[in-house]
Amino acid sequence: MSADDVSQITGLGHEDIWARTADGVAHAKQLAESNERLREIARRLVERRTLSADNANLLNEQVRQFTRTLRNSGAPPERALALLKIAVHPLVAAVPDESEQVLKQVVHWFVESYYDADNRI
Image (cartoon, rainbow, N blue to C red; front, side, top):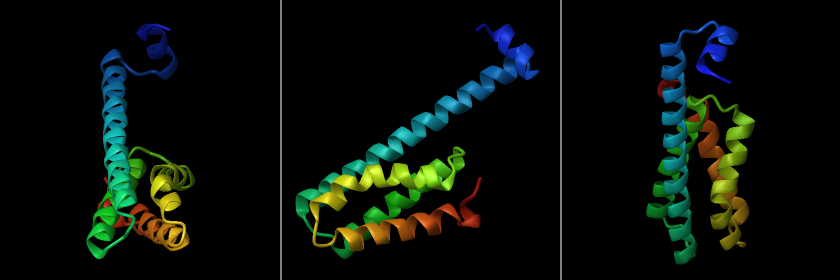
């Protein structure tokens, strides 16, 4: 499909199409970077096998950033939560005695961040 075809279908000019495409690519890159930071923190916490207050604060910050990135890119809450659970799965699986508590806390941070009106774009 050519740019002319897309323009005819959408009613958008070429410049608008390219601008929206660039925005989509930027959002995808931001999401990938946020996902990687969250996974890296989860990996470090798995290696330590503990969730100290400092580690919990770091995880909280990254969960909220990941959530905001998903929300701002248009992901509905159920899809955003599913992606978050995938990202933190290594951490939750590595601490079986605390997995339920850790997952509840992650979901709590997700809900607070996703519905935080002050952080909407």
